[in-house]
Image (cartoon, rainbow, N blue to C red; front, side, top):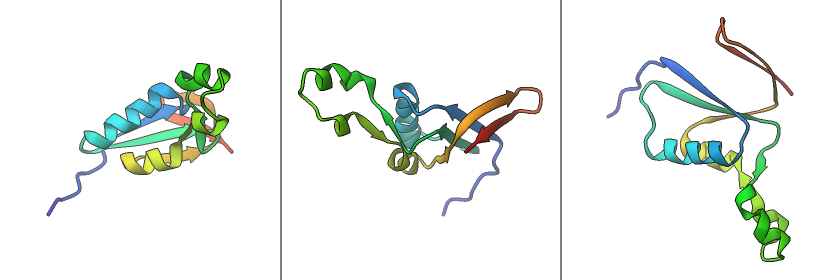
Length: 99
């Protein structure tokens, strides 16, 4: 049986782009004990820019460019907050989100 470690850190990723999608994927494979990962993005999906040239060339439909952030966050054991980051208070270590 595993015992839950106390939460010591909260890592917040702002935006669900390609780089943060990779962070979520890697986090799913090797999460850090005591650290919660949170992704903030305005929508539940994000476009994968690496497939854009193939879409423009007609090789992929528009839907194929979408990264399902809900599924990816669930896979990683991360929280997904839908909204826009409107401010970051580094002194108080807070991220302000609207939406």
